[in-house]
Image (cartoon, rainbow, N blue to C red; front, top):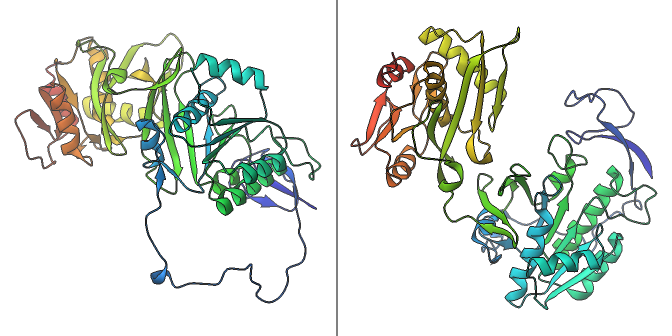
Length: 446
């Protein structure tokens, strides 16, 4: 067993400790780990070693998927659970990870599939109490409360369930390794054992993971590289709506999101996502409407802005749901092209409903909301703003514009502001603008 030092941010391994990671430049992220060294490699080819194959001759039949019984979860996973799939699901404490896993066990159990639920954090009595609250009554769910990784793997091999759930990966450990549960060595080796078990038996395994204060799964980044799919719960803890996002998926798109509502009976899928992101349909000061694309679906979102005089020497720039640098760029574009003085104003931006997005099409909606707040005048009613704004103030076309326009039209919006350089089939409700000066004139806020 040899000692190495692993960066918890990027997964880089070093032979000696240093204050700064030589790969990603992060400070104080190198943590000591024990590398498990096996027997010396045996020369020659044995029966257990796979032989190389021609790529063109490999049987590429599509793998059968297990439907979860929930369309939102199926969508995030790329159409369902693939045989031998290893999934890591993370999120803040209390956001609904264990609740979703217990509900998933119930959905699959109702279809006659055996599910093994392994808990290393809660007792059998605690999980039974939660199952009664969630109305989990399937007799096909097996519960195993243990912290021993080898015991979990042995049980999976014995029971051969259709799905196994490990809650959580930070709470289990290997007795052969002299380190505490949750350490880098235990995380890496336990995940590696579960990975081999999943692939060899064809049993999909869900692993629940704790998160750090920054919102990432605790442990080295290599943990995310080992699994097939990484899911993250987003949303405020006190907000009833939760967003499940795939940040890595070897069997589907990484742009899909699933929308759930937390109720007294657990997580319920949201059939009308636009009702979540639109708090009201009345025109208000500092409020604009945009349209984003997440995977295969388009959503209408509400952008809220507040620009007010600063009481401090340095004005505040606060964003919720967007990148901080994005706001700084857009404010500089406003000052340069419209001669609006913002250096003495606090500016706050919020995406309603708790959604987070990096879609550049929101640029136009953000600028419209800021202008409305500065001028203390509401924007024209029934308006949607879709466009990316360049550094010179030009409004640029965005991808999948027709899908965005179609979504806005279905919801009854009459004025759809898009780039003057965009090519659109229907021009009945579309208003083209080439730059933000044209936007300012079109809004009639002079």
